[in-house]
Length: 152
Image (cartoon, rainbow, N blue to C red; front, side):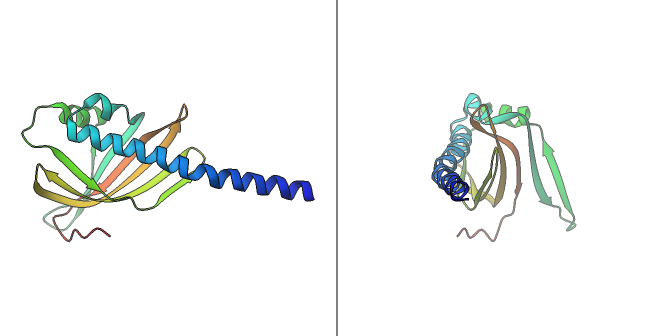
């Protein structure tokens, strides 16, 4: 019994110690995604996605109805690389990072700017998968609104 207790205690301790390292790796993937967006670096952005990634956004239409729109990842990446006058600057704050084995879920409130001009705000929900020992974006869904935009 004592041996089992020591094993469980050691497993929990090792898991707790690896958690900050995993959170850092997850943040690195998300930060690389946004750095690539800002710089128009399609190779950097593409490298953050899993091969089967999905992008969606929740939109409230003028009539008040809600629609979920899906964007093709390759089209999104292509749009990042097209010449554009203003920098795509999405400023995020990290909320909860939840990790279970090779799955992570991250909540990030954001404000989006075209150059220095505010465009919209909302929340990103990222689902990441650890593939070949590297965290990749598997699913991103976000909300978009003009206000209120208070980030805590």
